[in-house]
Image (cartoon, rainbow, N blue to C red):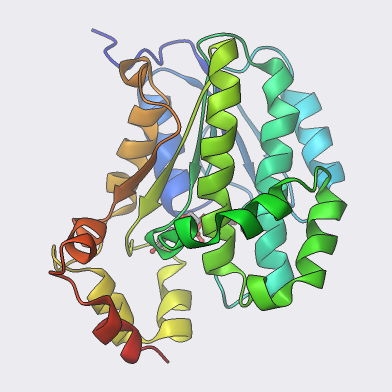
Length: 271
Ligand SMILES: NC(=O)c1ccc[n+]([C@@H]2O[C@H](COP(=O)([O-])OP(=O)(O)OC[C@H]3O[C@@H](n4cnc5c(N)ncnc54)[C@H](O)[C@@H]3O)[C@@H](O)[C@H]2O)c1
């Protein structure tokens, strides 16, 4: 039984070279989907197509989406940069480029399609900054969004946490509009995950913070554990799930909310 409903579906996965995007593309191939991959670096996976894109360059996104064409049933926005990259590049890839891919793919989507993006539990502070985040989201074009960031570096800071907060608010906002066309949109909030990005997080925040962010489960996630949540959210089985920022963090956000994980102590250990 094709419970998730991916057989014969045309899907796009950005960030398919490594980590969560690679694990997602792998599962989707196993599920019988026609998988079109996008990344800065060429994938070793056997996909229906691979196109090199740089999310810092919208022209490469236009060319890639035009090449894929046709009908697209699901989009997986998995590409991302950590805070060890320059802050404006982080905003370009994690928000402006991710939004640009989504807006380029949307005209190829019909009722029943779905979009999922990866935020982070590092974006858990989103609700405190909605008005500022809305200001950025209202900058409609790619360049306008980056110009807003350049003028608001006090909010953007190192880029990573802010970009992940923006993804959550942007997902919730668009989900409410797109569902009128029968298109769903969600995102995940992963905890620390064993991907090439992990070493960058350790470098930026220190081992103690990463260890604390793995509580209460006490271990990092595998890329596959993140991919299965993404694959589920974009599947037919999740047809009533919309506008959600789903923690996939072994209980971290729940632990913080109920006072069992001490966020203040954790941040005191930050580099
Ligand atoms: N690893 C973690 O602990 C963790 C935790 C929370 C959230 N995340 C998020 O998960 C997502 C996936 O990251 P990951 O952990 O799998 O790391 P990763 O580094 O393995 O994957 C990121 C992918 O994005 C691609 N990419 C980077 N810059 C690009 C660009 N300019 N254009 C096109 N592609 C580009 C990379 O080539 C790579 O394939 C990211 O958005 C990341 O912020 C990761």
